Length: 132
Image (cartoon, rainbow, N blue to C red; front, side, top):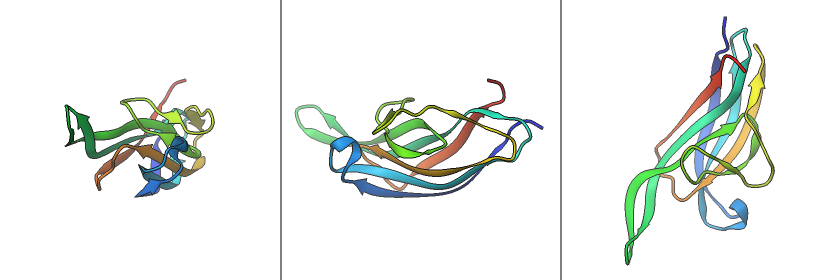
């Protein structure tokens, strides 16, 4: 049976006073576990996180528009990440990389992702490959 990641996560939004040394960023706080219920190894395992919010747009004046404010894949770990841009994450403190999760193994998750804005809409999906 191939790898299969199942989550038991709590996601809350907040405001970070220390994200990358800059105050006032919104955060998604993700806590809980991710378990590989399959027999195979889940390679390059992580959590794909998409959050929606109001984004500042500069055109002679500050406007506001609804859009994707965070679109990142983070490793199954504990840490703080900056979620700016599309498809990439920036560790706020240390270097992290996507990891492998053996069959039957669980990972404890405690992640804070900082972004420009986060409303009440977000999607957190486990991702992995079945080959290395």
